[in-house]
Length: 114
Image (cartoon, rainbow, N blue to C red; front, side, top):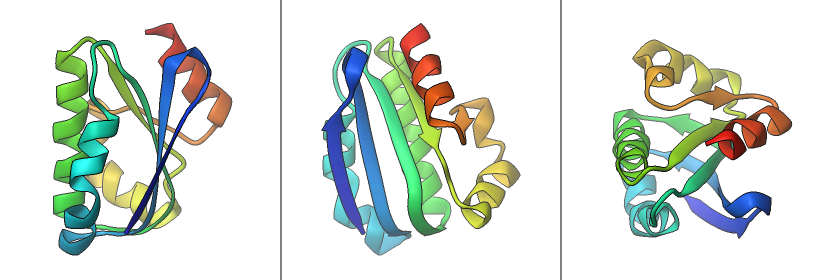
């Protein structure tokens, strides 16, 4: 599992995950992922374009981090999961906690509105 981070306009932090988000993958990126999602009123875009597979521990990472961000007045959005990953996310009902956007401009607009 690989993690990349960059800062976008309007103070949005973009986290790109690449690989398999399973026990080993989460273990490899969990500390950095949490670190990139810190701060008051954080705006976090999690790009899942290159995540090939997602297990329950990966879902836990996303949900717990999103709740932590929300508790500090911020917002997290999931961007562009592939069809298989989006299917898993849809089955869990995660979109009730974390918005999912397939369109980059819509994702940025959603984060900028907060």
